[in-house]
Amino acid sequence: MSTVMGSQTRPAAAQGGHGAVVQPMWVRVTHWVNALAAILMVMSGWRIYNATAFFDFRFPNSITLGGWLAGALQWHFAAMWLLFCNGLVYLVLNVATGRVQRRFLPLSVRALVADFTAALRGRLSHDDLTVYNAVQRAAYIGAVVLLVLLVLSGLVLWKSVQFPLLRTLLGGYEIARRVHFLAMCGLVLFFLVHVAMVIRVPRTLRLMILGR
Amino acid sequence: MSLRNTMRPAVELTALDRRYLVKEAGRLLPLPARRRFLRGGITLGGLAMLTGCNVTDTKMAETLLMRISRFNDRVQGWLFDPARLAPTYPESMITRPFPFNAFYDMDKAPQVDAASFRLQVGGRVRQPGSWTLEQLASLPQQEQITRHICVEGWSAIGRWGGVPFSLFLQRVNADLSSKYVAFRCADDYYESIDMPTALHQQTILALTYDGQTLPPMYGFPMKLRMPTKLGYKNPKHIVEIVVTNDYPGGYWEDQGYNWFGGS
Image 1 (cartoon, each protein chain N blue to C red):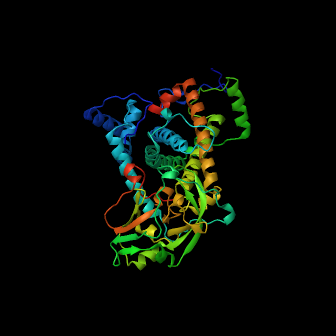
Image 2: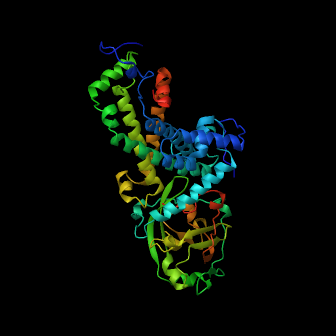
Image 3: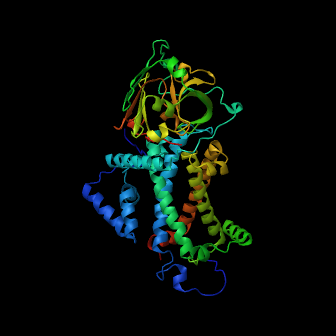
């Protein structure tokens, strides 16, 4: 797993060693707060879904949060504040510090295809943790898009009368329910792949806790 | 009511442990404002993350969640726009059959005698007293085809007709600066709503469903139909209405559901 892209030697800092900070404090804090909020939202959301179960299955109650519908709703409408406020902080700081440009752009389809095929062959390098590869960029942007979609569709479910423009954009109340559910599926899928990748490259976990 | 998370094992935390862990969490955060918010808002969540212990099943969690629910009441009250109407639909979109939903089976729906029925009105009104169904039917009536949204997530479109509630409140000379309107029902259900919603133009005291007298399974003798609120907030089989400033609660709210329940 040590294929090096290019032949330069990289300074210790670029390897995410004990050098300069790779993930600033605000990234790490918002990351973990988001992780917690998203887990609370998904687990309580599953219990809420179970109350009607518009697809042909239910989530086992043991993996849901809240104990019953009222409890699940309480958790859901509490954690939503955490998810929303923390998410807003994350997005604003990413733009304000220029981190979006540095870490997520550019993102080309060509680079994405190249890095994805390399990943499938086990040849995607993780020597330089200061740079996100194209697959990471797409995945993280995708996760943000899914979370935004969850929040917007969630607002339609919560307040379909008070947010008429959002309601119309999302196809009305019943369609917004399906959008909300499908976006959750996408987020859970991202979560599973994300955790698998962290296990694959454990240095990244250290990076997201200690920053370097 | 207990909130059970059966996924994690329960661990006893002393009060001292909790305080120490919260302080540790607080020290990891750079901005004082954010630290304050997080400490106030997710103290238990942060603990759960740091310690892997089951803190979702405690009295503290229940109290915090109820407090946030009451905070959400205020937010919803602020979001509520009295001028904004719920969407209406053509007759072709009415859900047939319209679902029956209650905390009991359909055969237990109360059977109220129309002739002897009297609606009692009291509290902060200058003209308390009782109303017959004929008297209510003689008031101006209004129809609507709107979406009923249940807190369980499903929805159904129905057609209701009845007295605009704001008009009724004016007829009994209610103190419109009061905070709450409370309802007592024939099936032991009870509910209460905020005054702004009571005065909303689509809030009606429904006497008919789909052009026919409201049948027992849909709430005879009357139901308060509000397309700006979730289904459980729309009380059926109403026998008494009281205008009050003392928080009256509600059948489901007293068990943990949100009080404002607005859509």
